[in-house]
Structures are given as structure tokens and as C-alpha cells.
Image (cartoon, rainbow, N blue to C red):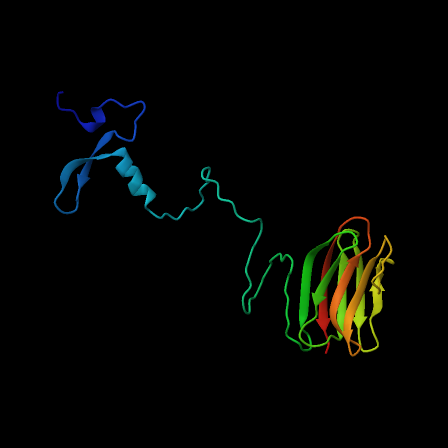
Length: 200
């Protein structure tokens, strides 16, 4: 074959991995023109780590959870984050300690028991039945729990709610609340969000 520049060669229609391309070895030192297969070139790029910016990936698909996901260890500052159950749990007693539980799915007739903390609980419980939109505020104190406010008549302070109610009751030690239990009396599963603030 007569001498030709690379740019003058014919374009191959369907290259395969065993095809050979010319390559210059050590161009910055002692350059030598040699050859490499397309497999070798492909392996070279597969071993590289690249940072992709403003790129659209089609394959392989990268599967990641929806939204911001964080594993909380120790003290963390969360800004503009959506938290899922259990949200923030704390066993540290003391005034102002806030415990939160979100998206608690409770089946019909089933219960969920939440721990107030290592010390007995005096304070307020805020509960929302996300399935009905009903809200309730309950005060726990030495004399027992009391409903401070609710947007309807859904929440009752016993373990036998009707089919249109949610029961809320506590395990007590020396008349002081230790755990909170929520019982779904409805004929279908409901989802709740609960938070409580310790005052003592």
C-alpha cells in the first residue's frame, strides 16, 4: 500500500475490539510509534476516575433514594431537610428535649409505642393523624394526661378507641409517664406524626 497520512485512510464501518490503532508510546520522552488494540484502549479508560459535571447518564442507571438521606450520628445540624421515621429520637432527659417521630404507619387495631427517654416525662405531646388531618395536643403531668386541644374528637386517652378514633395512653411508673402508646382504632391503616417536648 502506498504511503498515506492517517487522515487519508478509509473510515471503518464496524470496528471490533481486536482491531489495531497506531499509538505513540512515551511522547514526552523517547517516542516510539507502536500499536494497541481497542480492548487495551477501552481498559485504559475503564480504570480512570472521572468527575462528571452537567452530564446526563443513560447507562448504567444510578439508583439513589429520593430526597435528602442522612445517617445521623452524634450532633448534626440539619437545614432544609425532610426527615422520615423515626425522625429524631433522644434518650437524654432534661428541660426542652424534643423527640420527633414522623410517618408512623399503624395498621388497623395496631399500636406503636414510643419511649419518652431515660427519665419520666412531664410535658406536651403533639400528634397529627396525617390520614385525617386531625391535630391534638396532650399534656402529661403528675395527675395524669389531659387533652389540651384537638381539631375534632378523634383522640381519646384510653386503649380502647372506637372505629373513628385514635387511642393515646401511657405506661406510668409512680404516676409518671414512661412510654406513650398510640392505637389506631380505624378500620384502615393510618399514618401519624408525633413530637413531644419535655418540661421536666
